[in-house]
Length: 532
Image (cartoon, rainbow, N blue to C red; front, side, top):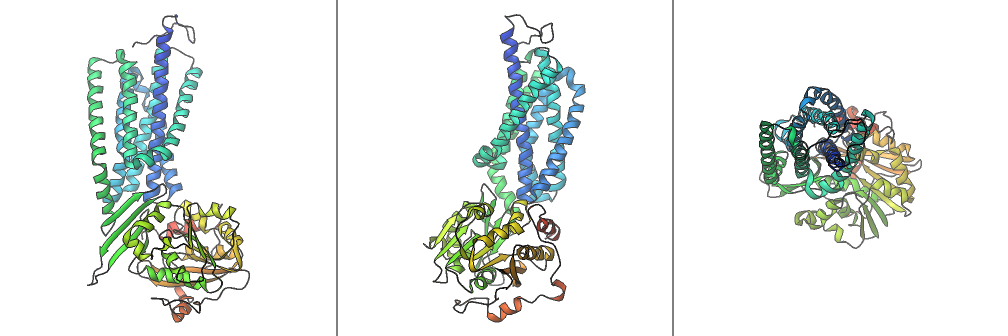
């Protein structure tokens, strides 16, 4: 196909030429559309990977978007000298972008797992990808004008319309198609392949006449190299992911999956020091949730003090592993346990993995248990039921998504679903390693209208770990075991009494509560847990 350039700007081309320039112009706009979709997917992939690995969704988004937008401006300026050979330059840009963008997730995961250079690697990757994406529009503008001369305003309008609509497609395809079907690593490879095909196809059809023989050979050879690299990465992706993931964990990984919400990993190892027991550990996005060696200490301290009183209806927020539910079900007068956990994949694992089922006592098979897989905040806003006890066993507030579950607004919603005489217990992190986070959670519970009793116990896998027991009103609940408590492995009346005492170097801190508009607990957690 050759291009036609009418003599007049925005004028009518000869009738015989119109079908050809319209087809060529449409091909350019389709390429703009596809390239924009691919470019946005690269951005989202970097943000999502950082959120999984680092946990700071807002920070990762700010770094990636800020660096890429800056680099796009630099790339647009850098493309000026290339405009005389726009078609060949565009082919090179798209092939390099497809290769680096397709391999970006793989490379960053390797930098995180083996080199401990994730931060610099992220900035460098975002800058290079932004540089290449920024060079696309100026080159495409020149190519579009060579097909049919238009006024600058009309050409810009056409290009940016296709660009923005393509970005919409990429934004929707990433979470709803690429991640569920291919996963992050292979999803990036698929997008890289699409990017390469779109760029090379445009140049080798519409603008083939503008390429010298040497340029055609170079584009063909580059296409083969990119295809081989992306294909090899596709074939070895599964083995690479297993090897890289194992590098992040001390013990052998026996189960790993990436759900819609998080990465779920189970590790298992034989305990050292002559013990025959196995140590089963659950990690969500790299954060330890429990160790089977000492999880009973944590769950006994979390559950049993809160069940000292009416307990017919119990609400559990989080705790998809079933371990807190196991402790609740030890009381025969508990009529129903409602578990609200966002991720159905965690609950499914707790129902199916043999050793985890044994550890949680097959809690989810009990007819008294009802599971609701929705966001706890949203569920509480529309809840009409009333509960005697609410157990908040939620992931630590070190991510934007979980910080809202430790706010005054969240605890006010909890208070609204408590029956008369009801109690709330909140896992609150470590008063030793993260004292400001701990006391901010306690302050948030108090500001929501509760009287609180903070306490802490030693859980070897976690260290000194804290909880907040609370009841609506001015009278704090008694920190005591129920009179009919079952036989426990760790918690005793004496242990619980001493749990309310804090040493002088870890006493109460006067820190402000956390709210939706000012999530202070997130700020504290990021600083205090840094390095652990």
